[in-house]
Image (cartoon, rainbow, N blue to C red):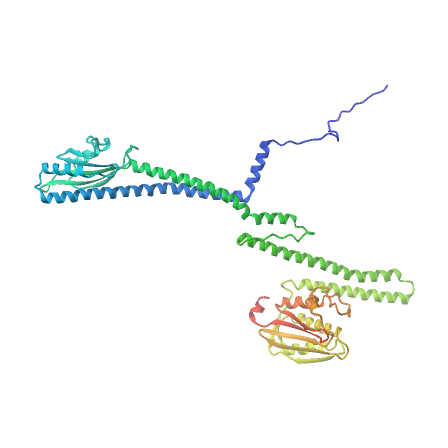
Length: 505
């Protein structure tokens, strides 16, 4: 019996092409999320809220001051018209016998010859009745049946007032009055009233124009801010992009600095930081390469001699001596590296007060045993200075050893010290071959040697680097003066003033 099994797989065939479609809604949502996450969007939102608050506050303030200015102008007009009436009345009163009929005649003459400002209503009231107005029909709010008119009938003194109204076609009622008297007895009233609805409508039209202009300014400023913020924040975007591209194999990326300001300073600071980082990485890489090279050589020598070592006891003893010598050289190399590392730590120095003359005698007695040279102690500084005695002794011995290695028998090596402008200076001068100008800075680097000399020591090229590190740990410095064929002078400057010593504490 044959059984046939058919397996249907739901997995797609390699030849099948799968496509993933994204809905327009998802794309729009992703765009909004990306847009909302941008710094310039947040800046724009903050700017928009600020502008809306400013404009929202300024509109009622603008409306208030505009209405106040309109009302002040209306009051000035009313005051001018009433003063004109009172001036004419006083002149007429002085020339005419005063009576109600005479006042009626004066009112008729004045009202017929004087035209008030728009929306101003001049009213003459005699014996508690409306006598005449500049218009045939008065608005209802100031007509004979109004409460305000009834109040005017009771006045016995001149008055100026503003009466608000709930009717938008009337606005506020601003009026001034002047008494009409016969033999010093009030018999009537001259009223100059103004309905402010017209001026308020014009003022509101100005407010609407202001709102339109403000909206246009707001939209325009937001658009310009949106476009300008992209260019303004470009250094930040470049910073982010550059930071993404930087890794241990690519440290050369830098930001382009355009213009001035905080962002330009940020770009400059970032570039300066990257220069330091790249320099540190390069120094570390070179250090590792040089250190590995210096360690590889003795290890190769040891391995080679051990592999070739035979059974002869004498040969074994020679190989053992060579191996111990190479191990000792590696030990000195490791100790030098540890010393360079410790020089960067705050507790590296053990300061003490040192008598300069006594210190010179002690060091001179030590360095004269380094080689058969014409040693000379030329000058001794006076007084005291503060330093790490052992570290400074090591520096001078190192400089003296370097002078011995680059001079011949009976060549002169000079050692001296002096006080110089807040520093005590120690120097070691030799009459050797000298150092080329191109090498005078480089020889203080780790594993560096002068190019014009052959190797005369078993050191790893760390001696002058150690000298420089110890000098800088004391907030001092090393200075080299040399010419080819005329020898070299190494000067160690250590600060003696209190301010310089305080930096190390």
